Length: 331
Figure (cartoon, rainbow, N blue to C red):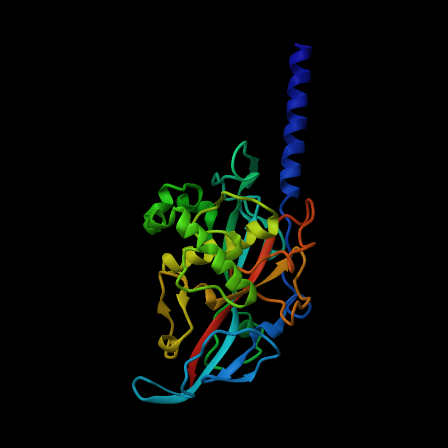
């Protein structure tokens, strides 16, 4: 009898310790808009194809004409800039809101935790992460430009959690939204991603290679399983790109760039990866400029800017601010 009581006490102690350790793994920080955001990423600002302010920042093509017309008959200026509008968490613990200061939800819904496991053949290790998609029109809720019609109007919102999405944890089930993944599961398609990596590292990725995530690997399948885990920064960047592509495929995210977006956004099931730049805001805000920039296009190598951005326990969850390319007709 005494032995059973001791075993029960030891079990309760072990359970309490495991629960405490699990609770402590949820870390995060709400980004300080003054010190943690690289505001130069809003640049370049352009009118038509002519850059007005660049500060040495990178850009993709803009509509050529500085004058635009939208129905019924409104004439305006063609404005181009990069709007901080979305945010992505990449976390090890389910329902851990990294971008909201490390708040841990407990909705009572089972969801797999992040994992890393070694392989006997092939890549050294693989991984799995959960992710969250935030609507974060920062320029608007900070009231920086209240009367600027080109800003997305709205407040901060948690729009998507992969923990409640059965497709995020199943490679086969996610084929429902990306059946085209079967076409690119071959050596030639994978080898083509090397060119995308080079292009993204010196500028922006190659739009025709939409199945590639540059130096991070492949966008398919659009779930949380990563066949190759090199480090937390590299893996979290790939998860960020996959979640963005998934949001476009499910028509939760729309396109705001190009000639077609001057009068309003349009659906883009196949994401144009050139339309996003990312900035890490947690665990270490990436505000230090490398070659004049502190924002990275999708697919750029993490070797330079990602060094020292991950550390044990408190620095293994990540949050990224997404700057979205915006072209609009300002009246």
